[in-house]
Image (cartoon, rainbow, N blue to C red; front, side, top):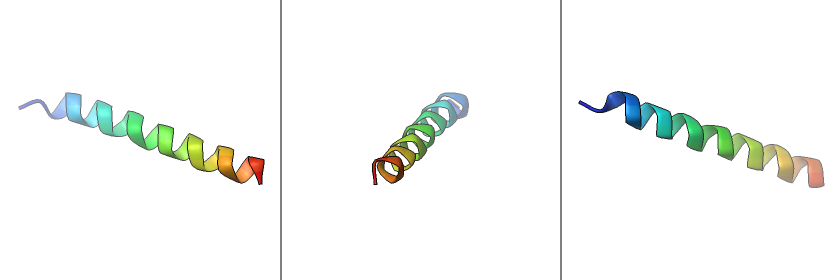
Length: 28
């Protein structure tokens, strides 16, 4: 099972999403 790989990708996607949300809030 490649659970580690999926978890790593999921974690990176979540981090990118949080950063994008923070940037949009900052711009506003």
